[in-house]
Length: 435
Image 1 (cartoon, rainbow, N blue to C red):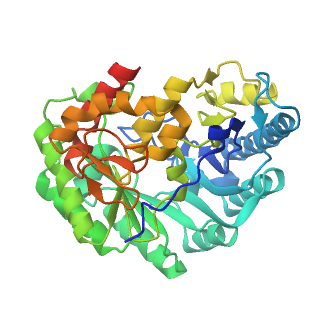
Image 2: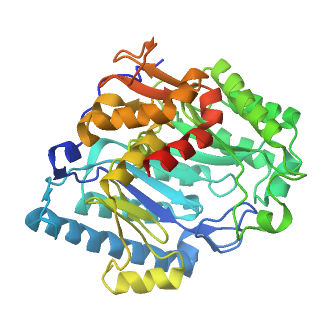
């Protein structure tokens, strides 16, 4: 089991310097069809279009490359001259993680992925041991294609499985079958890729505990290094939202959804996975480095339609519609809408994101960045949940302690699985009292 309580480097924000990101997310919006639960910014291109034979993809890649070029020039200007508020900006740092998300990035050709990585390396630089992740869907790639992705630098793959039940895949509107999943896994093993993850969804319409248990068992059997297990959220403007009222049949009850969460924790940890984040499980050494940047509230670049960046203490999102995104890039990527992250917002985000991790929030970092008095306020909110075992306090070595107040060193975390299960209740109290 990895040492999740090893010491952490205090971010540059603690010294009054705006840190440069070392991670980049690239949104590839294309899908064969839109899944019934999906509210992401995607472009549906059908079953026959892919990579070099799709004008939509060809045009998008060119615009994406232009955005990368413009953003690099903008960041270089910030480094040289600082920002409007006069804050110091640290020197540029190479990218340590890159993530192709979507959509379905495996609809890109190998050459297109290679060009994007070359552009990132040319304009920002990529370290030799960078984690370069790519989401792929069953039935959208060949053996040659997978080898090609690996040859141009992709070293981590995330396979969108969702379920090992044929009927539930149809209920979701997925374009693949269970046989497609097994063929995809065979290709991954044939190429010799060890660092691959699978995505699963619980709480689907008509899904039983027995179906969920079988899916979890099969997930363990195929030997992936990482499993992401998400509970269905019925979002507005999705096909599911039009068909199913939240909390009503055929969706599982809240009690069944909670049992599914507990079942995932039990089956996956018994299968050798470490439950290192509220929805994520990994074999030792295979935790997703890129996603930990988000959970630790560190800065990151975002590129592509609908992508979000957190750079120079500001968050901003790109347009979610294709033509609006194209116009935005052609106009020089002028940022019209941006959100300056205030200190109190940064505190709440650090708590919200950090408490998703099994290791929790580093109290030393929290004290340095926000002041020791903030610990008393946080403790006042969390005491009731500490009393019922949902909140835990650990020393610097990760040993649980009994405390009457939060120490200035150590860790604050939610218990597994019950604290994670009631995380929304706990976070609502924190935002209500500290917001």
